Length: 460
Image (cartoon, rainbow, N blue to C red; front, top):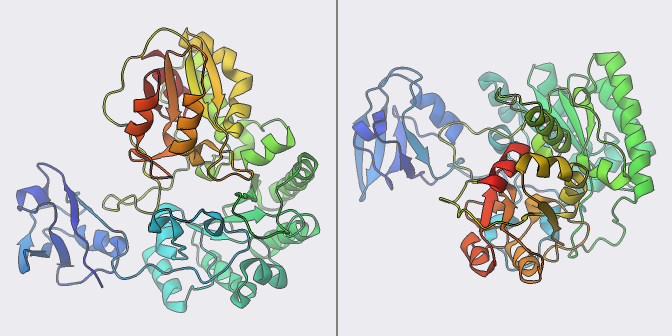
């Protein structure tokens, strides 16, 4: 087991006062060698914990002067200290199998670790879950967890996961729910495989056997041009509309039977079907917002609040998977603004986005222009890097953005880039943000992917 190293020390914190420094290796807390950041956080919450650290090959014991529950002021470089539980499924629809060769190795890591589900909202299939895992989750109240269901028919689920344990591993889902653990589910809906009659059975059995699920997100199959499964294909408009009709039916049944809608379809399905985005109340708190469910409605709601002059802080509906304070953003794409952005020149602000983003923003572009008091235009960037039906802003790549900017001949005062396209200051294809900025004929500003964030970036 490798020991985590200190990535950050907060000035003035108990850790800083004790002399801890970046690069120190954390060996133990109160004599216990933690296996992950969850256990570490529980140990470090004690008053005056004693840390064993390794520095220059020498082990040193350091006692921190802190109250129980007081933040220690350390951020570590890893979440899992022993070994990430990798995925032994071979799902035909897995997007990792559809990545192009030559990308950084971490992008090809398939995890099926309940700890990363708790920390970052990663979906687990539970095919590698054990009695010991169940005992720890229940004892330490590690929830919510996020579970990929896909189908409740054992044969269909095993076939989709290409794993014989897929047909039996949902017993762990029932065990978690019976012990009061909050769980959110997900179905990746693949036309001709687990939609139609299979989805009807899945929804019925969820209500009958897993009715304590907090939510079930229904997201459509995503395909890149590197897909090798010939029988997989994306939703047509008609198929998307039919699947949404089924989701709406089971929402109504769930509302009658368990008191909440439970089933929630992704924005992408509504956009593909050309159907109206549901009202806010239909999302019941936006619990799977970061899974692409309710993002468009939350954006519209925020825009409406801005138009109404509502100065109150908008409610947090991001559904963003939250990590505990000391956990790094290694399994979740970290977003951050990069320094001070240039002011820009007069002229339209061009919003860089994917095809689905353009579909969502087009109906409200005029309202945004009124609020921004300047012309805005949408630049839909085709995703040639991944190809297929990849069209979300979060999968924009630097190479595609540069291609779009180079071919842009419209007057532009500034380009607005949604922060979801970046991990730190780097695109998914490892292109640095500065490289894109250097070729842009106008300042490129990273904007928070909200109504307020886009408007702020447009007028600053």
